[in-house]
Amino acid sequence: MVSQLVNEELSSGTVVRVSVPERSLRHDLRGVKILVQRELIRFWWDRTRLVTSLVQPLLWLLVLGTGLSALVARGSGGLNLRTFIFPGVVAMSTMFTALFSAASIVWDREFGFLREMLVAPISRATIVVGKTLGGALIATLQGLVILGLAGLAGVPYSPMLLLTLAGEMFLAAFMLTAFGVVLAARIKSIQAFMGVMQIAMMPMMFLSGALFPLANLPTWLAVLTRVNPMTYAVDPMRHAVFGHLAVSPAVHEALGRGVTWNGWAVPASLEVLIVAMLGLAMLGVAILEFRRTE
Amino acid sequence: MTEAAAIAATNTAGTPTAPPAQPLTAVSVRGLVKRYGEIEAVRGIDFDVTPGETFGFLGPNGAGKSTTIKILCTLAMPTAGSATVAGYDVVTERDDVRRNIGLVFQDPTVDTYLTAELNLRFHAELYGVPREVVPDRLRQVLTMVNLWDRRTDRVETFSGGMKRRLEIARGLLHSPRVLFLDEPTVGLDPQTRSAIWGYINELKATEDITIFLTTHYMDEAEYCDRIAIIDQGQIVVLDTPEALKASVGKDRVQISTVDDAAAITALADHFGLPAAVHEGAVTFSVASGEEFVPKLFAELGVPIRSVSVARPSLDDVFMSYTGNTIRDAEAASGRDIMRHFARR
Image (cartoon, rainbow over all chains, first blue to last red):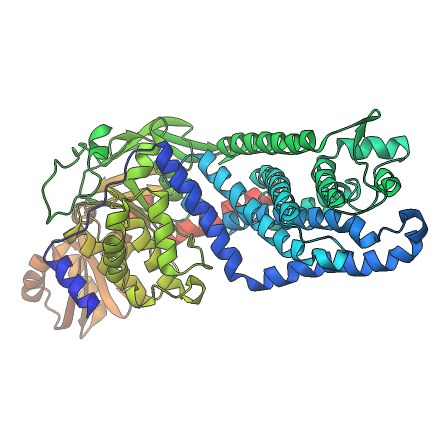
C-alpha cells in the first residue's frame, strides 16, 4: 500500500529533492555524533563481546588475585591483593577494549565501509575524532561493567569513587584508542594489526604498575615504568581507590605511594593531565596520518 | 559555490526556489594521468560528460576505468592533468565534489551489522541531509530499489543483489548531481542486473542526474547515451553506441542455402564478397545488409532457405578499434599482472 503510494508519487514527478549543505562546524559535529552512534549501536548489538570481555578481568581478579594472595599475604600488611590489583585490572581491561576498538577502522577498511566515510563531505579529522570518541566510550562502558565487580575486590561502592574512576577510565581509553587509530592508519590488514596490538599491549600492561607497586623497584624497571604512558593511567585510579580504603598509613605508604620522579611524588592531577595531553597528541598524529594516507 | 548551499531542501511540489546553476559539463577531464610507481594506469585522457547524460566507460578489467573513477570521486590524486565534477575541481575543491556525487562501488561498502535503514540514516547524517527531508527521501529511494519492506533487517541477511540495490539507494539519498556506478552489475544474476538497469532508467526519467558508469559488459554499454572505449589507460574512441556501430560499417549476413559451396562461389563472382561457413551458415559482411538482401535473392542463383542480418555489435566495435576482443584484452592484462608479480 505504502510502496504503491510512493510509486504514484514518483510517476507523477514528485521527487523529494535534497541539497547537501556546505561544510560547517555544525555539519562536522553531526558527523562525529553519527560515527559515535554507529560504534555504540554495533557494541550494543554485539552482546557476545560484552560477555566475553568480562572473562579476562574476572580471571585476573578472582584467580590471580586470590591465588597469589597466599604468597604475598605477609608483604601486604593485611590488604587483600584483589583490592590492590583492582584498579590495575580496571585499567587493563579498558586498555584492551580501547585498542581493539581502534581495530574497527581496519575492519571498516577491509569491508569497504571506510570508503563510504572517505567520500563523504566530511573532513578526515571528523572521521578520526568520531572513531576515537566512539572507541573510547565503548571501552569506558566495558570498564563500568568491571567497576560493578568492585565488591568482589573489597572496594567500596562509593558514588564519588566510581565517578572518578569512570572519568579516569575515559581519559585512558581515549589515549589508547587514539594510539590504536594512529597504528590503524598505517597497518592495513587486520591480522597484522592484531599482531602489533599484542606486541604493544603486553609490555604496556606489565610495565604499568597494574599488578605490582611502583615503589622500591630496581632502577632499570623504575625507568621503564616511568616512560610507559599506561603508568599514568593506572596510578590515578589506584590513588582514588586507596583514598576510599581504611588502611593503615604503613600499608598506604608501601603499596599506594604511586609514581615518583626522582623522589618527587607526582600528583594524580598531573598524571591525569599527562594522559589527556598524550591522548590529544595521539589524536593529532592520527588526523595527520589519515590526511596523508587516505 | 554558495548557490548550492542556498537551498536546504526543495520539494519540487513545494514553493519554487532558485535551482542551483548547472555547470556546462557534469564531468570534464583534461590530460589525466595516473601513475602507480612504474605502472601507468591512466595515460592522458580527455573527455566531457554533459549534464543529464548516461556516460559509459567500456573496457576490459585493468584498462584504467576504476582508477579514473577514483580520481573523479576524490579518492585518488591525479599524477598529471585536471578534472572537474559538477563544476568543481577534484583536487582543490574536494568537499564540493563530494557533496555533489553519489557512488556505487564494485565491492560492497555497506555496514552489514546495521539495518538497511540505519545504513541510510548514517549516510544522511554524514552528508548533512536536512533532517526534515530524511524520512521522505529514505522511503523514496528504498521503495525505488524494492527494499522498503526489508528496511529493518540487518544487511548481513541480504543477498549480493540486495546489497547492491541498497548501495544504489544510498548513493541517491542525497540527490547527487552525478552518480558514479563502478561496474554496477558485476557478479549479479541476470534478473538483478536487469532490475538495476530498470532503476537506472527510472532515475533518468525522474531525477535530474548525470550517470557515469563503467562496465565490461557490451550489452550494458548499449544503454548509455555515449560510451568511451578505454584500453590500456587510453580512450580509443568516444561516441554514441549507434555511431560507433555505424563506424564499423558492415552488417553481418548469414544465409543458409541448398548448396553452400555454390553460394560462396556465386557471392565471390557476382558481388565480389568473400564468404565462409561459420556456425553452419554462409557468412559474409556487407554495408547496409538489409538493402542488400533483395539483391541477394534476385541475383545469387542459388536457392536460399533462410537469411539473417545482424547489425555490428559493440563487440565488433571494440575489436575494430583495439584489434582485440574484450575477453582477449582481459586475458592479456591478467597475464601482465601475473608477470608483474612473478618479477617481484
